[in-house]
Image (cartoon, rainbow, N blue to C red; front, side, top):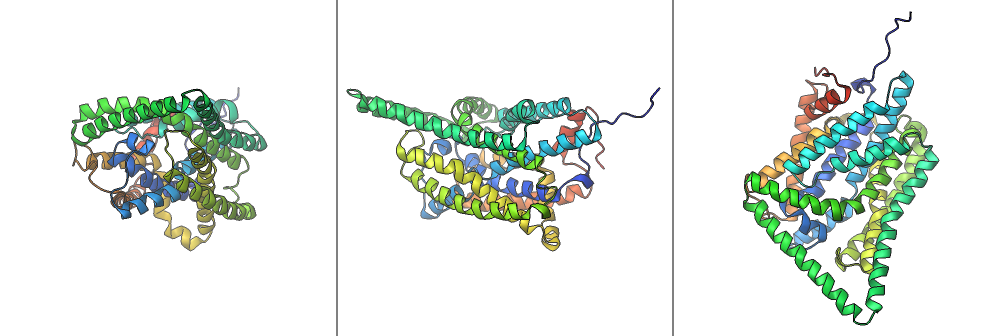
Length: 417
């Protein structure tokens, strides 16, 4: 009778972690807050559909800065790293001969639960729900796909929103060609914008002055808008970066960085070129078009963003990867790696801090600070997280939420010390 202990699934140990990935994840946490701060300090509806103009020239410059350098770039990095993480865990599970599918299935379920609690009880801008739902697609349909197949699907997922927007614009133009069609279309879009403005005004009032219960009711209503209007467009971009990350993971790019330096340098150059051109077009076209009214300029803006945002995120990741190849620079970025090891804890901590500062049940700063001040606040919050993360990980193996995530995933309390 064979009494050899069977290998069991378990979390990646600290010594098995790839520090470059942790640094990239920490960098992404900063960039995500840089974009999200606008959604904390005013209605997500107004920000998403572009209803509110900056109050000062400084705030206008700050908005262009965030649009060019940050919008869509950092959740793309997170999605890319999500795909890499799945590939690494899948490969290590196969090497150890342990079950992967159901363990990772539970991992996604727990992440979904955390995201639902976060979205409905704290903040509507949650990204964890989308990551977990798309993670199931990766698990069921792409975990065994070949790298070439994953690359093809990445291109397809990037093209789908463009084709959809182009088709929508085509239908609008056809409608305008009918007798009285142009006036009818103008009326429809005017009524739609008026409805958005009314919803925005209501949300602004509730978030600025409401109690926790009142804000939660508003949050539930806002989640319906986000699920129906925003996520279908954003989801394909996230899924594309996930499949691209799975591609990079299967090619073991981050497990052999020295051997992949030529590829990383190419990504650095082309990511910068495409990213700069794409984001210039995105910001420029976005200034002269509406996000809620299909037009040639809005199609140009969304198309430029679809390719420009992932390209610039690849430039960021390539540049940081090359930077940390130097041991001295890698040591100086250790606090960033600590923040990355506690990414979900820090992400949720940003929500707790910012909703407390801005919402009516907290300090009531909602709608009272500009975009430029939001950038300074982002830097201050992230500085706190860098210090807190380094302090915590000197004493514990996981961040608090990471510990809970792993404990529920593996159905066994994980050692914290």
